[in-house]
Image 1 (cartoon, rainbow, N blue to C red):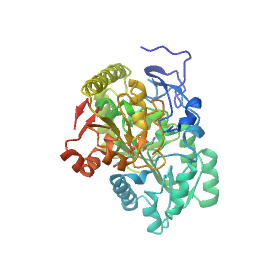
Image 2: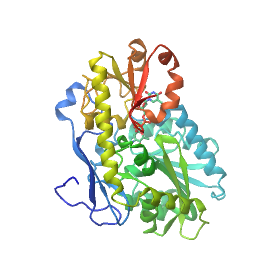
Image 3: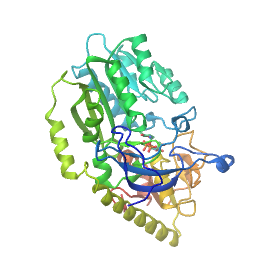
Image 4: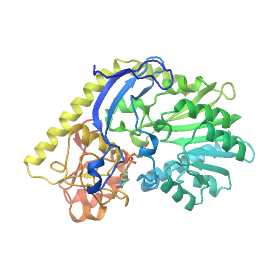
Length: 411
Ligand code: DWN
């Protein structure tokens, strides 16, 4: 068991956390930087702890939000067409769910570039996006989505309530797992939500992360790795109950959690089924994370073994997708430009920069096409299907994709 210098408390149960995995010193997952910024690069110790009281797996420490989400934040949801379709389906589900009242008001936390709210906007539904990264919020506003650039908190919930009234639905996708003050967020939800309104949020699912050893989902921004057990516990403290859970294939396996004020709506049988399945998988037990730690070590060993073999053979190896997730893989395994020559990514804000910590150059997709590597590490493995179909010419010409999920293999 790794040792830690202080005992940290669960952000929900306020009981001591038991340390379970230590990734060592890590940079920011999205901390892409220029040559000149290297001397000031920020690192922190990435460690996971588990609370047996709340069953919430969480980072022991998270950098301040302003360090992670700012006016140069480089992630835009709209870069994946599959994610675009997913958010359209999510929006349609909310609109057709029967949970919205007449003339509804829909709020989304971390609405990014407006990829989901634009479907409410185009339907003339009153909405508000709350997006802390200013540059991203600006794109959402340009996309016709009414967005404010703020961090959500209990006090922001009060001011939204005062200005716009209570919400029929509060939505979030890949957002709640980023916010350290989850208790404050839930208190804000309680204030802002109509008595019979719903909260619907989705995040990468702990059950998938454990079963696929997708340890790269663990980085500065992901302070929580949720399960139905931990979500149920956290929201119950404010009288909010889990009424439905819906598994999603996005981000390598996510869960959508639907919640409402206690007693407001019927509870779906899927909640009980999922809780039972989680008990079988041991998501509520600390010893599960001993096995997880061993599997992460195996994965690191196998990734490095394959990359060293490729280097000995003189193969050109590159990364595909400068994901936040790749930051954990590269820094935890100690993979630098000697093993991975460049990483291609379609995001202009990442191109021309260096990857956080290991300083591998990030290049455009055009560069990738002009310099096709023998092997591409699929850092954006969660978009594997979309990428495979886009890259059929590369594959036909002999290019190969390597992934570590659920074990190291060629796709
Ligand atoms: O939770 C989070 C998720 C939703 O998004 C954030 N903390 C940050 C970010 O995480 P990520 O960077 O690991 O997400 P993605 O969606 O796996 O990132 C994909 C990256 O790959 C983007 O930089 C865009 C790029 N990409 C590409 O170059 N070509 C993506 C696709 C689909 C492509 O074809």
